[in-house]
Length: 66
Image (cartoon, rainbow, N blue to C red; front, top):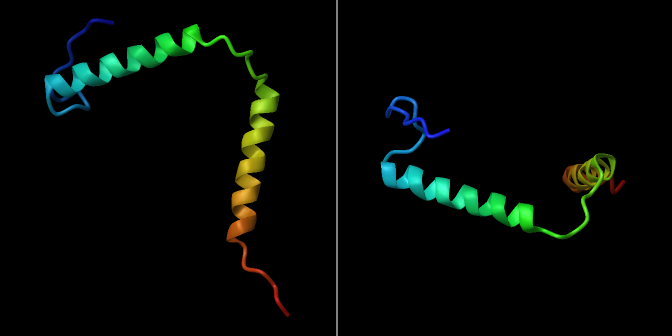
């Protein structure tokens, strides 16, 4: 996991950008691991996101005012 990527393999322009992203990502992982909220079951999470998608699609549909 500590492999150093060449600039060709890295998605970051500078080493500083890569290090900043790594620090940000590691912090997010630690926050997630420390989260005490109950887990959301997969089926429930998928139902929520499908509803969000359906609602967004409905807003994009032109209304039939005739």
